[in-house]
Length: 70
Image (cartoon, rainbow, N blue to C red; front, side, top):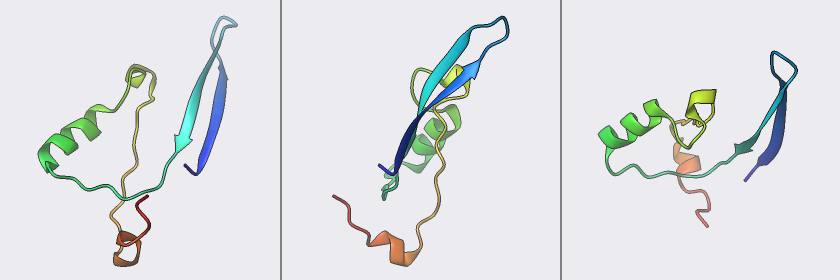
């Protein structure tokens, strides 16, 4: 885990909303590319409808592929 923070927003009408933002870094092995692509496009978790559940996935460079996986 690299970072965790709570975002707080003011809502129209005076209400407030808050949600957690988590930054993770690691190596992911995809065994079923079609299933992963479908899940990635749909989003993850219960708050997808609110713009949460997004995941940024980047291709690992060879030097990164051997990073500690513990």
